[in-house]
Image (cartoon, rainbow, N blue to C red; front, side, top):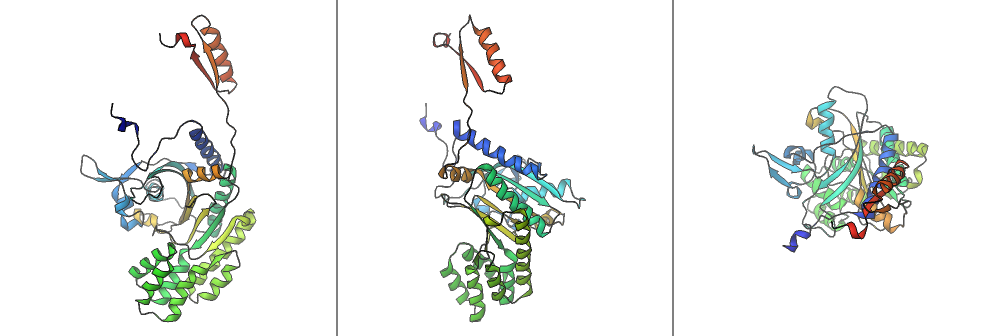
Amino acid sequence: MNRQLLHTPEGVRDIYGNEYATKLAVEELIHNRLNLYGYQDIQTPTFEFFDVFSRQMGTTPSKDLYKFFDKEGNTLVLRPDFTPSMARCAAKYFMDENVPIRFCYVGNTFTNTSSLQGKLKEVTQMGAELICDGTPEADAEMIAMVVESLLAAGLKEFQVSIGQIEYFKGICAQAGLNEQTENELREFISGKNIFGAQELLAGCGLKDSYCDMLLKVTDCFGSMEILKTARELASNERSLKAVERLEKLYAVLCQYGVEKYISFDLGMLSKYNYYTGVIFKVYTYGVGEPVVKGGRYDNLLGCFGKKAPAIGFAVVIDDLLLALARQNASFVKEDITYLSYNESDYGNRLAEAKELRRQGKRTALIPRQEDRHE
């Protein structure tokens, strides 16, 4: 036998036993919380047409997609993220709906990246999307639901960091940056590469005041008070409206009672270009990457023919499990009762097993040692 067949490819892994039981338990806890908010389950295909995740959608770069062809010659991809699929579904099945639409989902995503750094290429994501509601109250509902879901899953120490894409875009427009330079600067700032950002701006011929303004965006992080600094930094209407939106959002989050988990970071940007307003990430110790990512994407549904605002988030279940393990979160694991039998007492043992199962207890029948190899 080829022993290589026993191993999985790089970037994927098997999950079984208590680890998988814990994963299912965490998913159920989060799912119950999403259902309490009125979110209905939806399942989308594991693979879609390439155009659903093309560059025009502002999603994962083509080089990081798993691409293949069907027998008709269409280019297909394994989904790298759920949001474009959710937008497609909303446009297809709810084209004429104007009332808020609430989806929730769970499934695996696939990213074909070569710079793994210990990351998996296949991860489980669980999330929610709120479509046809562009209010600050909708933003607050999503973020409050994230906080409550993580608490329900057993995570105690975490912080939701909130940013605003429009704030950054407003300053870029004020400085007169073209789209290409803005996108390059966005990558530097989102990666906290200040030296790269400085070098880029130095070659643009901008006024020193505009360069300082763009670089100081990275300093706008902290508690609610940082929004005052953000107001003083920007003098354009677009950025100021973005700050006002964050102030309204925070007021609603206070009504939810989750403000202790909230901070702001106006230098936080996303690699996904479909985000248009509020974005947020959840950080916790013991995990290098955010365990939750989300934000508003008011223009994405228009790519599928339905103009509607939308906001959503995704919990990276694999990273959440790692955080829970490192924070010593405990889960009640019900043991399996094993009932051994031989041919003469099988009927009695089966009746006993059926009664235990009726009571909701996990029960397995196993033949006694001497009868196992008949």
